[in-house]
Length: 134
Image 1 (cartoon, helix red, strand yellow):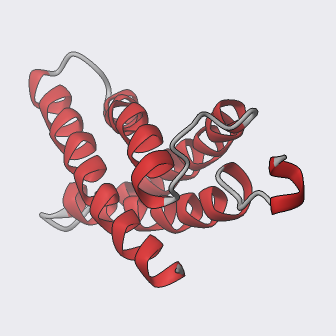
Image 2 (cartoon, helix red, strand yellow; image 1 turned 135 degrees about the vertical axis):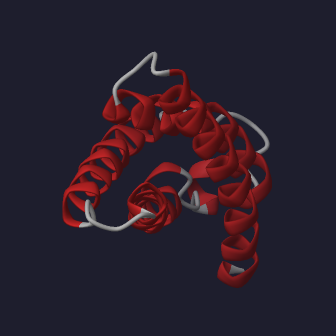
């Protein structure tokens, strides 16, 4: 079961990253926001999609589970912070290379993706024992 969940999570994650990246790059390109704010907005763009796609498709929760929204919001607050901090740290570390933005984005995304999967599996959409379903 975890192999299927991980495979679907990676697909959902890929789509979420696409939303994130396009928003981030678009906002940086327009100059409307600082890099950090653009990164945060890009991350948040995929959040709604990620919640519903992971809830229904990845973890099979067709109905709303009480508490899942606040747990998801807490998890995403934590992983958003990690994502933005890792991105900023990598930008500082890689400032001399031409692909600093791309490298920082990929590393920040990898860190937050790993945290998100574990958090969703173990905290947000954890399996409900049969004894609690009735």
